[in-house]
Amino acid sequence: MGEQGYMKTTSDHNVFVKKFSDGDFIILLLYVDDMLIVGQNVSKINDLKKELSKSFAMKDLGPAKQILGVRIIRDRGAKKIWSSQEKYIEKVLQHFNMDNAKAVSCPLANHFTLTSKQSPSTEKEKAEMDKIPYASAVGSLMYAMLCTRPDIAHAVGVVSRFLSKPGKEHWEAV
Image (cartoon, rainbow, N blue to C red):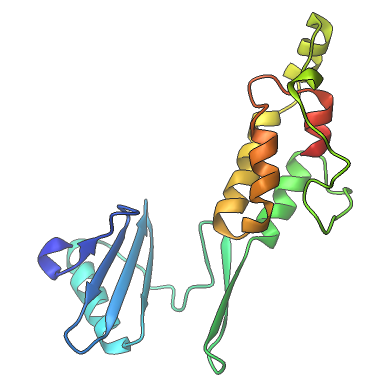
């Protein structure tokens, strides 16, 4: 990509940016076999696609509707864009048998006070908690937090403190 004038970003080595002298720019995001191209100039985007297709077998799926489990919603007239992980979150809830859980307006409500004293203290409690996929659930929350739900960052930070020795109260907070 460097020979095409695209610079790898320092924050993410799968993101490339090319700035044109007329002020236009193209952002190219790569992840395994997924690609997302962002820009305002359709002609320049098409030129990039032609150039890339010389080196890679590509299939143009048109305007992006989803990438990496994140749904992309656009209102071109209003020049607005949104992202959603509603389906991902529904799958996570089903996977952890939480699809009947009640939605809350405030992640990790005040009545949840979590401490290491709530970690298992007996072998029986440890064995019981070993059956619970705590780390996997917290990891799923982290992915949602990083992509579309920064509002749960504090709650995820709190429950992640107990990854090495979660107790029932920690699991209930998840």
